[in-house]
Length: 417
Ligand code: UD1
Image (tube, rainbow, N blue to C red; front, side):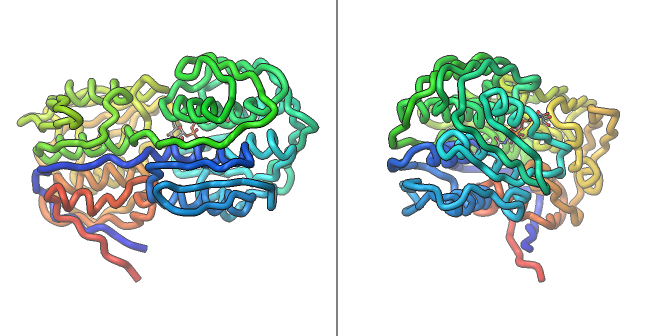
C-alpha cells in the first residue's frame, strides 16, 4: 500500500492537462457488451477503476486491445457472471446488468454491498429492469436476472440515479418498443453515453433532460468515440490552485460542465477565466467562506464536496456544507481536523469555521474524493502531511502526484510495507 508524503506550503504554478472522465468511460466501456461489432475508444483514463471494469468485461466476453485507442469487441458471451470479488471493489460494476440482460437475456451479478459513503442501494436499477420484463431474484448475495425479451416501459425513478439511468438506457436500447425514463439523471456522463449509443444506432431523445425516450432497435453497431474530460478532476485542480494561493492553467477543461463549481469557487474569491483553449485559475489573497449544498446535476456535485470543504478550512468566516446525495459522506472531516481544521457535523451539514493555517500530520484516506480533499489540505498545510491508503486516489485520479509535481508541489509516493 502506497502513501503520499507532502511538504506543504508551495503555491501551484503551471499547466495541467485534464484526463478523460472515469464516470463517462465506465458506462461507455460497458456499452461494448451491446454489440458484436468493434468499438474504438480514445482518451480512456488509465485508472484502477477502468482496469477493474475491463477485467469484468473480459471475463464476460469482451476482447480488448491497445490503450489509446482502446479497441473492444464482444463477439459472444463467455460468462454472464460478474463476481463478488470484483463488484465489491467497484459499485459501478452493476452497469453490466442491463446490457447483459438486453443482449444475452440473462445476468448473474453480485450485489455491490455497502461502501464508505453510505448504503447506496441498487433497488431503482432492479425495479426499472423488472418493469421492462426482467425476472429478478436475489440469491446468495447475487442478482439473478433473466428475460425472454426486454420490453419498453414507463419508468419513474424516485431519485435521479446516475448509474441507474445509464443501466436502464443501455437495456432499453435493445428492448422491444419504447422506454421512457422520468426523473432521469442529467449528468454530462449520462449524455455522453447516450451520444455513444446513438452513434451505435440507438434511438434516444431527451438525454441531458429529466425525461429520456429510448426506442429499442434489434441490434447495435460498432463506433468510435472519445471520452469527455473529467469535470471532477478539473474542479479538484481548481480548488488546489485556490487553497495553495497558486495560479494554474487547465488544458482540456470542461468548463461547460462545471457551472455550479465555478460559480462557488468564484464566490470563494478565485478568478477563473478562459484563455484560448485553456482555463486560467488564480487564487485570491483571502478565501471567502461560502456555503454549498450538493445536488444532482446541474447542482453542486457531491464528488466535489470534500475538496471544497478543504478549501473552506482556510476561509475567512463560516461555511455551511450540506450533503444531499449520500448520507455518510463526511468521512474526511475527522482527518481534516487532524490537520487543524475547525469543523462540526450537524446532521447532513458540516459547519466549517476557517482557520488561519493548517498544520501537517499523518492522515488516512477513506474514499476517493475524501482522499483528494486531504491532498489539497496537505498541499496548503505547514510542514509534512502523510496520507495513507492512497489506493483510493488511484481509482479516480490519473497520476495525481506527477501532475502536482509538474505544478511545483512537493509530493512523493512512497511504498509502504
Ligand atoms: C454516480 C457516480 C458517483 C457520484 C454519484 C452521484 C459513477 C460511476 N459514479 O454514482 O461518482 O458520486 O453518481 O453523483 O458514475 N440510490 C437509491 N437506489 C438506487 C440507486 C441510487 O436509493 O437504486 C440513491 C443512492 O443511495 C444515492 C442517490 O440515489 O443516495 C444517488 O446515487 P447514484 O446517482 O445512483 O450514484 P451512483 O450512480 O452510484
